[in-house]
Image (cartoon, rainbow, N blue to C red; front, side, top):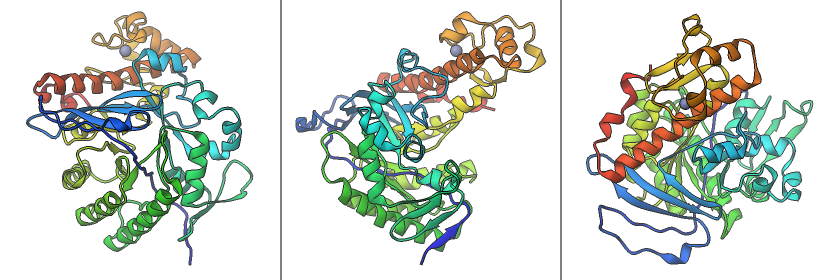
Length: 405
Ligand SMILES: [Zn+2]
């Protein structure tokens, strides 16, 4: 029997085939070199006091230094940015969304166009979300059954679509991203222990089907998505079952749904120790600079969030001294750089007064300059954390808690 949900929230999954693992300060474990052509991950250094670690993800489209912030390019583009501009900021991986690309223009068209990398002119690493979260949150009507999800698209006049775990893998294979996520079910927050258990059990069965459909790929990696809402026992169970399926990396889904921050961090604290150290850990859909800091010190390697790009388009800019709402009158005659400590193109060349003028005049350049700065800020923040981990420095000096308000 299907279950009709007017709104439910979810996120994605994964799988892995090969990896390398090095850990510790100078103490290297055996490196499996058989994995060089496809996906791999190595921990280069683990910070002494915390769980923070610096590593490298290897893909068929280059290396990704971790911890990393992954910009969101939902429809095959990071809004307002060209691939050259992203690469100019040192960005090595971009996320795109299976749900949106399946509906428009359709994965077959992208396949005919040579795959998503070629279609969007991005030759570095790509990750595709499964679309589960978007189906549950954006589709008009959503029926969840054992076999998959039926939903109506808001784009095509309410036409009915059906996606199974197998179909999602097929779509992602046609898109050709380096890291792909399986279809998962996700609860809203709050939800009961029983609801969360039911949801995670379905997610696990879907993960198993996804893994089977995925088979062995030399060029793509499939990750697993850990669910279980805010219940540590369910998170542990989900992690254990997914690890048994041997995915290429493990993501934490179903967080940042409105639960208190301390609860999110408790879930990280109780879940991460159960994950293998030699596989990447991906915190989906988070977050603020403070979220990134709290994730990194607990051992998270990958983050994605629409926050910096969306906020940029709304005129909310992240700086080393806190957030700035650029439309405010106080910046009318402020001819200083947006962030004096930032060396991005925007901060090197434009004043707050000019950025305020562009934003209030609704000029396209405002969206571009703001996005460029915010993405640079997030990217540089994690790069600095990585540098500090590698240099063995105390990470607490990078904690944005006092300015991220
Ligand atoms: Zn800047």
